Image (cartoon, rainbow, N blue to C red; front, side, top):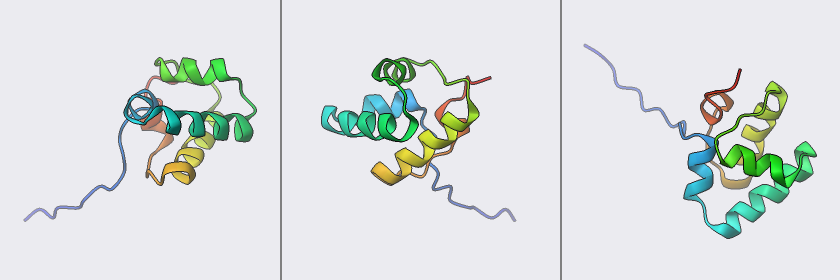
Length: 84
């Protein structure tokens, strides 16, 4: 008999999360990412349009910022599935 284990991890990509949150939440996330990662607004816009950060540390820190900002249990691999 198989056991069902509920997966509480949000599997959405950064782009999907970005499209699902309100403009006010986008502003909050953008300011938190800029503060924590020291990246530009254009960089975050690129991520929102489907590009992925090359640096693994940026992907991991983005995961932490999203968790802290919204409480979403995400994983950096699912946030940026096309990353090298």
